[in-house]
Length: 295
Length: 278
Image (cartoon, each protein chain N blue to C red):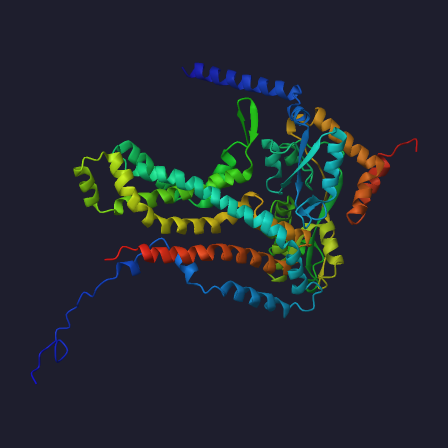
């Protein structure tokens, strides 16, 4: 048999060969949190909770106030915590998402404006709010805005939670702005050229040709941001807004602050957020795979 | 040129000074009038300080200070709205006008009187003490020097204890978290109000812990009205409320209702303000 290097025998030189490089595996795609959440098996928080429920009983068995009493207390407080606490978190997230989406869509379209000042202005605000810590934005909105505004002689009070909604909608606005900009730019430029050759105006091209193709590819990142926002609403508790975490603390106070209460109460909060965000995350990843551009 | 600037600056400063003097001398009674106009008094109370102000299982605010706030509203003949406040934001809420007044377990301190109006006589008092494991055998505050001590965010004595005894305060937002940290040996003691620690120890869940030191900084509590109204109708009215609470024994009655250990302070105040005809 003939010795053919590289075919019948290993190549002698050992020259490096550039193997196909999978870019998507090496670049974070903005779905890190959602992908992680969606990859968990559905029973994982239940497993964590049951382990935590059994664990502290062993060293602290001599204490008169045990885990049993703590879970009893949680059972009594559950309706209040869900109705006044968690549903309020959901309300905050829905409103912040609505405001953030509308404002973000406008900002995103401004980012692709033909006028340079508008483009620079939109780019600046997008980057400013996208790269600021959410908590800092919340504090600025809470402290900088008046608690009461006078409209036509009548004083209208702005409750803290409205400011919380507004504060959370700012980073959402900036991120949705990037989603919109990215989606518009991802449409092949041939579409623009084809529409222009048919004498469409720029506005017609955008509304009738480009944006209809964008909705589908904007949906997964939009849902991704909603899941992140929903999980960020407990930040509001640091501002004294009466959402799930604040009320959990107050409930523990009313139950005399036994340290045994911490695991059941905060574990319950974890469970509620998991039950809410998990289906969203699964569905987001499903849609993302379905709509992914096939090369 | 510099002369002109200097004189301009000094005249502006003078103007500002005289304006300040004028407003502090006359009573606008803005907050009081607002309460009367809307027929509702908004009182800031605690929602995380049992039994002074906390929530029942239906979410209603209850407690001794809520009863006091109800007394105020009844006397004014207006509706009562309760706004839960925290130690860290209660004075800001009053300053910004989010609440008309505050009854929120606040210790009456000189630096706080510069921010909010605290009319006398004080309605309650408490001291500072620690809860620590019996095994550590602390006998005096000096024993804590250089050690980690858990505390509650917003409590005025955190700084005092730090400066006076050189302890390192680890502050928590909630009491449950702080007490868990004490159990986990993340700190050697939990510094808090002596009355609260006393009721914890009495509950029987803290058998291996004790309150070993002498209470310090026995500090009267004050309710608060807006700063520029402390010498006007609002402040005078609240002084009258507190005086009559002491005189009629209402506070002692409420103390018993909410299961608070009877304090010497309320007894002394009751005697001091007693009606000489009875």
